[in-house]
Image 1: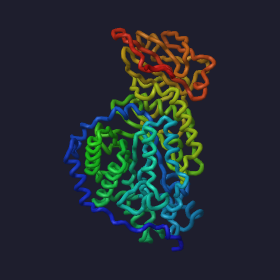
Image 2: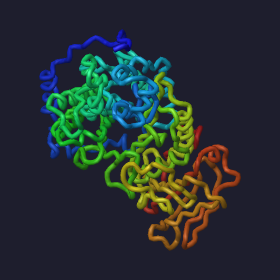
Image 3: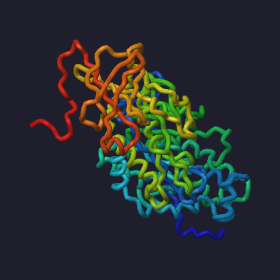
Image 4: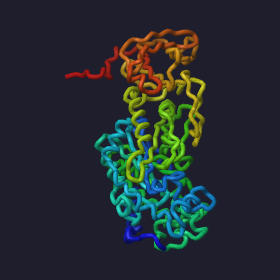
Length: 520
């Protein structure tokens, strides 16, 4: 081997597993939740999450150093016949000498600015943040005592997860973290098929992990390690969102999933905080945690709160050269469609290996933040209306449906509502403004079964003046002001607020004051 190894950290003494498991069991036995599905069914999604609507996901790791393909480069670089395998050999060298391990010291994050990052998230309108705590590559971005291969000892040599969560605290952004650790069981297995450092260099066996075939279920020791690493994230960082990738659905994880959820919910009860476990597919029973749909959506309003996790890029979750970015209209469309159907949007970015956010991604976040600054009243704290929306463009139900932009038109609207004293505020959000300046809400036309009898003020968020409103059998027609206010013109679409008074209620007292006004 010819690569420099002066950067390799010293081995660590792994904490006693049995003692740690006994401590976990003690918390579970103390309640209020036990590790049964029947007990976990008593879980309730906290109101803060139902109100939050929008969070930031963050894929950061040493896979951003090669910046090729996507965040699965660590696996695919060892899969013979793939573009990643050929790219690695051509650009970085023979796999037996230069492996994934050699990207770790180059992952420096030497320009990482957690305070600036958190401030950007705040300007974007994010209410919670979910940085990757550990991805499939087995390199924790936090101080994990069960391995020497973590960001405090290699590469950044700092607790980057703790740093960014602390900075988000200062910006009133709720803490979260994601674990993709389960897939590490099989992630580097292709490297065992030919001469590579995965197969032949014993010094790095503890980095590359079991490297077993995916069809081979994880062992008890691996499952215990997964549980205790996750417990470390819970106790060390107190996230109120804990997101899991798909492979925890493997049957071998079933008793450990129950233990983990009971432990987390019991810890949260001790903290006096509402927490959310997010899962894919059928890893948890309905009602015991929050379903997450990857890069997708739902066809209609869901009874239970759910989440769409997607990215500002269509090509990769982590940083690569040559991203295919989404447009501002794409992002607004994804947000309002999810919110209208009782969901939250978790939007991913991927920092560069120096720890900076690519300017294209920062610009997309700033743009979405400008839209939310203007129209956030129609998003935050709202609930679904009787129907989620109208128009010709339907969001396909299921995962992995965002490969191309949806052809939103001015007839596509999404609805939310807010219950207030004496009235309901109904919001109609559009991604594209009508060319003739007239918004037609067909759900509120005189012949519609959804038409409301009493209609109060109709306003355009971001505009203080009155609007011309007329109702036909076909639609409620709202004439937008011309010219539009500069703040409205600067962002995609529009949001209308329609007041639906309750004739039996006392006169409402305004809870949302005009900007700049207040009481003494």
